[in-house]
Image (cartoon, rainbow, N blue to C red; front, side, top):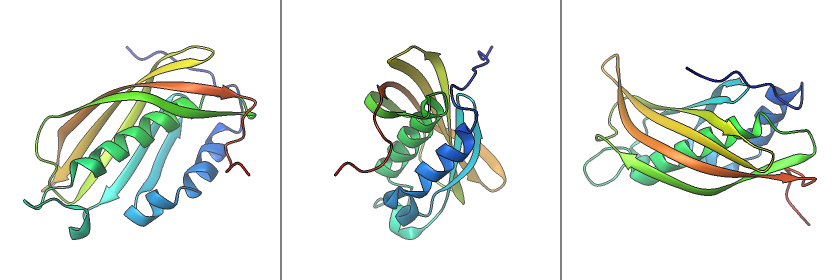
Length: 153
């Protein structure tokens, strides 16, 4: 059963989308933020040959990046307007080759504390109309109270 979370910022979805849009790496990869709910985020990435490893599968670095971002934004969705978030650690299990037309990463907060947030991320590959779980990630996030989500300087 999934816990229902209440975001500290009523404009959480817009804030998550604006933050995601500032991520140059996500734009470079061609990733799209497709769903944002309190404590949940979904990111989709279409197949591109330049995102693969030597066997033609999506590279594990791409899979890990999507997992990190989906879990991070799931946590970010719960924070107050004056806070930001950083990943403290994550463990990624690669369960199957990431092959197909696209990847979908779904991050979900498991437990949200004042400073530490635990999240789970699952990455699926869509191949010939079927989704297959290709990676599972557990992560720890740190809320940064009073810290802007914009570049420092």
